[in-house]
Length: 79
Image 1: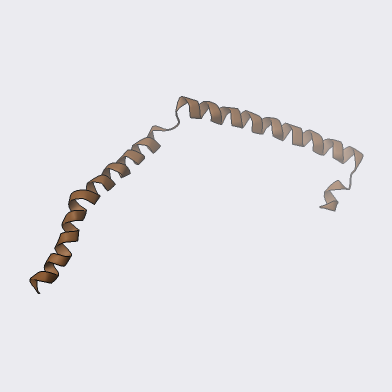
Image 2: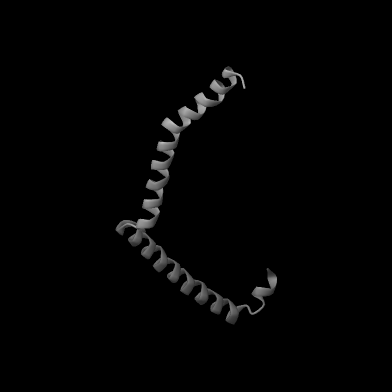
């Protein structure tokens, strides 16, 4: 192999190993750590609030469906 070709292959490889790979590894394991830590207290509170709102909406939908069932029994067939 020609020394010029080796230099063309070796230079980017060395730059990758020195600069890109360490930064890539640091960012990768930092993101893994954040995922494994779970939810923060604020995120947990938001999630709990959203779950409560979803439960309230479910109850409202059931109530509306029961009202529609009693007042317009064919409403489900219209869709």
